[in-house]
Length: 301
Ligand SMILES: Cc1cc2nc3c(=O)[nH]c(=O)nc-3n(C[C@H](O)[C@H](O)[C@H](O)COP(=O)(O)O)c2cc1C
Ligand code: SF4
Ligand code: SF4
Image 1 (cartoon, rainbow, N blue to C red):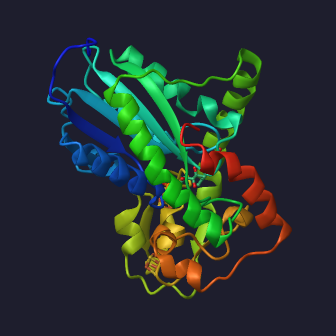
Image 2 (cartoon, helix red, strand yellow; image 1 turned 180 degrees about the vertical axis):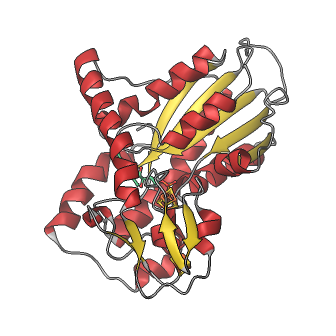
Image 3 (cartoon, rainbow, N blue to C red; image 1 turned 90 degrees about the horizontal axis):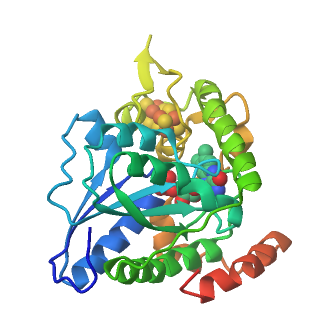
């Protein structure tokens, strides 16, 4: 635990899950921001740590950062699996950064359960922040907004680093009733994801390259009778769907949640992505432009 005024050298461990690259990008931004201040920082993808059964060493860090995308107003199941493997914390300071498609209050409790589980393990969660990135689920944002959110995330990541180094406290919570409703929705989402996931299937475009099998964070994908099959361990991270080079993965049920044009953070980062698109003049684009105006212009949000 940091004591105000104490001179200590920081060494920070960032542990993150990212389905489609947003949280990985934000982790990179946070890492760069710490490094630019001369602070030691290492980052680890939690699905790799889990699948390779790598020991999670926390003692060498003065502070831990935990990052993940918000799924159904809560944390993806893999974060709970990771937390169950974490050693006890001896009151080590933790900050949580989540990425999301929106900054709306309904997302505020997405780190409440994770913070509680950290506390049970003996960690001190003092800071939680949502950083909006593009939406990889249900609603596709226009290209300009996706790019603006990406650029704003740099600023927000820098502000987060300044805050956590100063051990500034930050936490938003819903009231008891609203929070209860949101927990219930998240409970349903958690049960619903494997059902939708088990309806995933491949079309004739699949050439059995094996990328999805290698990349699934829960080893949910396997080859049977020369065909890609899915078990019931999916939590809808969307990685296999958008990363398939043949665009061969779709869902039998509820396939409306899959973005028709896919989601590729590397395209969004690329300035040329914007240049070729022109301004989106639809009502939907105008709505989101207005909706995100404050968030984009105010670094503290
Ligand atoms: C199954 C699922 C549920 C989601 N639920 C929410 C949500 O409740 N609130 C939100 O703002 N974004 C939601 N999103 C959007 C993601 O949180 C957002 O795009 C995130 O940045 C993706 O991060 P990643 O690329 O690291 O996986 C959801 C995405 C998925 C795939
Ligand atoms: S990544 Fe696509 S093409 Fe490759 S095996 Fe999976 S579904 Fe088939
Ligand atoms: S099956 Fe696809 S969407 Fe489901 S957990 Fe694996 S990679 Fe993610």
